[in-house]
Length: 100
Image 1 (cartoon, rainbow, N blue to C red):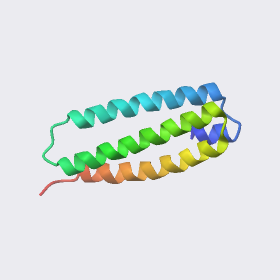
Image 2: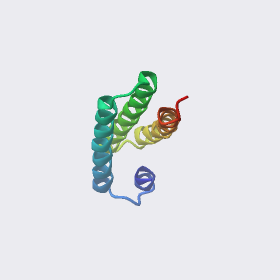
Image 3: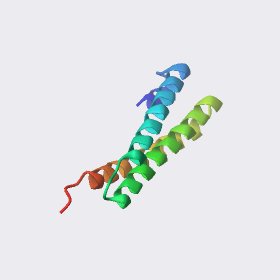
Image 4: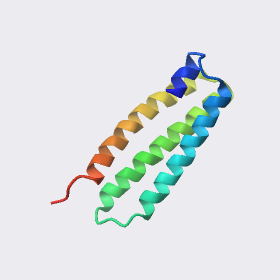
């Protein structure tokens, strides 16, 4: 939402950059926690880690686009964020699904 607001001129660059930094730190922490969790389902854990890594990459691209003032790059990163969010949702559901 912050990127959309920035694209519309409704959010200052400094605020948007701070939000992206915060998200980046949160994703790094989440990835570390997922990696350190003991699990009997390594495939699901790997998929969840990959989804978080994809989100992190999209956030990094958004940060680079924001810093350069490149709206096209930010827009592309937004699309990547949407796709990565869907992947994360799927991986999360599989990771926490009841095991038979």
